[in-house]
Image (cartoon, rainbow over all chains, first blue to last red; front, top):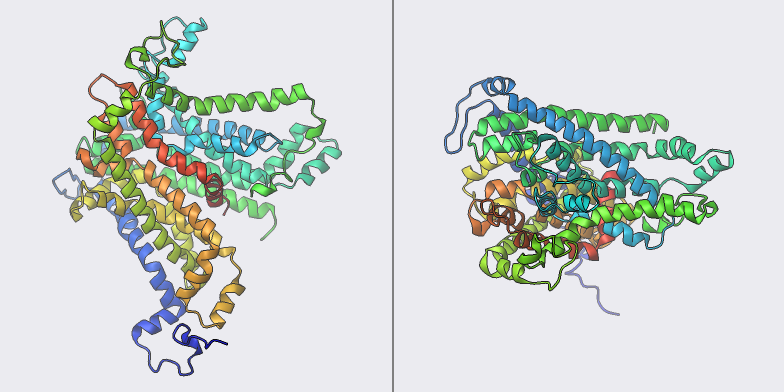
Length: 319
Length: 292
């Protein structure tokens, strides 16, 4: 029988360590060790997330420009923005963009999830390729849309012209409303997979027996969907849609690639306007003020999700 | 998750007739798949089309290519800084993923298992940090990056990407750690293991699927990141792929679609290849974060 290796397992030695330094005490108490383990993550988040968040709010109250530190000017940036029609246009655009794209993503995503929840051949294969738009870098797939929406050589225009439905190419990104619908379409295209796959995961947790029981009681498929599936899916819908709304509301990449806010600011979202004013425009203070103006909307979205979750607890009885 | 699929599919399908099934299942599915994949097809076909066919829809069907060419790829690889962008993106993604994984493992373990005072609140705050979008942070971060003196360097991205990776990874790993039985840790404690030994010898080997999920997800998020890279990097040789393709390959009003689409295609390949090997991990990390 081999001797137990004492060096490797200190607990097998008889005598405990004679005295403990500060380090040993820190690494043995629950809170001390917790502090040590949390330190790297917390340091990162404090310095690169919390501090910038506060700094952003502060910059919004100053007239800082690139290369020149600013002074406190109170609410001047906000007063200036309040009278700025372009800012209000960007708020309007952001609302339309978020609302239409989120509703479309939800509807189409739920539909796709319901289809994928059936018995299908090659189901895992379909699930895998459907997630592709979400995996590929947004900027790069947006460039494919840029080319698809080309004013002269758009493949959509060409196909419609071949079918005889239109007689000249559609100016997808050159007209205000065309441009708005085009960027929304691209956003929906990218967002469907996330919604569909997340809701599919939710659907798979609903026991089949509930649906069967309802069917035996004579419920139509529509009734089974609205009275059994949908209520059970609500908590997941609340979370998925909160994320979806959040990311749509703060979207930047798609607009930056497709239109840069044009034509005549018709597709500027608050995020792109903030970038436009702050980085190429050099007005860091004003850009920060626009970014800060997005925060109330984000809080509203988070609270919406929070109460959505509360409702679930209430529906299921207290915990 | 995948093995439950068979049990909980839509019920009573056996009573459906075939024509009805085609109408409500296969047809919509075909349309979805076509729409979701067409942009990739279009990207690929454009990337290999000779310039002469690119806009000549009269003589060549735009949907197909006669005599595919690698000229665009060659141009990209040998006459632009594309390889440098690829290299930058790779370094930045790998480095920020490693940092994020290391810090998140420690944080998730502390929150979930050490249960220090205030662990629940910390977990909640980390989740809230996940909800802070980069588009409201990039202006103050640009200011900080400039003050610290790392503007226009890869370090600026390596240090800022973990801000959106750590909350996500921590949240995901907390879920995985929660599923590991306490008894294992307790018996290791009784056997005299330190917390560090428990973490590295007991918990982490059991949480490998979670580590893979978090790692590939973090890598993909870093690879796809755009707004920080656009703001913090100014010189061509330090750019990442998404920024480089968009800002350097578009010159004036002449769009070289072949080169642009080649750039988009090559830039997507690393994440798509990674994805194809780890589909299930992606799905579980995406849905895992939502279901918690």
